[in-house]
Length: 208
Image (cartoon, rainbow, N blue to C red):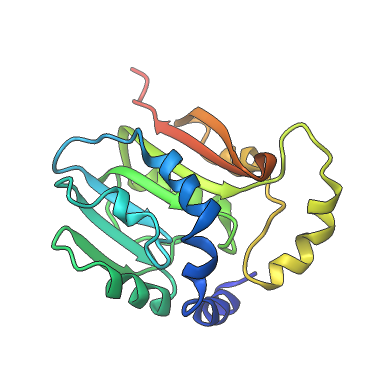
């Protein structure tokens, strides 16, 4: 996958994306993932790869300052049409090269984005860079199943990639890029027997 292909494929996905990923099992998964998230008023929340905005309702009307970015303007336009809220700022931006200062964000949400970008390691590094120390990130995505040789997943991987997503990534291979200054505090199976997982992490304070 590359940026040019992603731009094309998600332009195609944008009119129908919600029918697949904002209903049924995915909606129930999001309710589970976000139900225990409580942040201070005024917290700066960044949605990396917000897509059509399926995660946004769980953060609205809580006095957060929310920025939602996506590489696809078409996906962002769908999100904008659904949510008219003064706490929301939408921006077209590449998750692999974000235009935010270091340590400026209180909470990062990354749903179904590491499996989409051309360089998930770079994206993980960018998420860590913009996150304040002692602040958290939440990832909801599909990864290679842990402690399992899931043959079907590996067979389908090249086919699914054509559709704009990778089902064969190992999260901890990606995490090695930031493990010196981030920790994983939760790794929970959410859907499809552990293919989709909730991963909560935190950026550590510098050692004195």
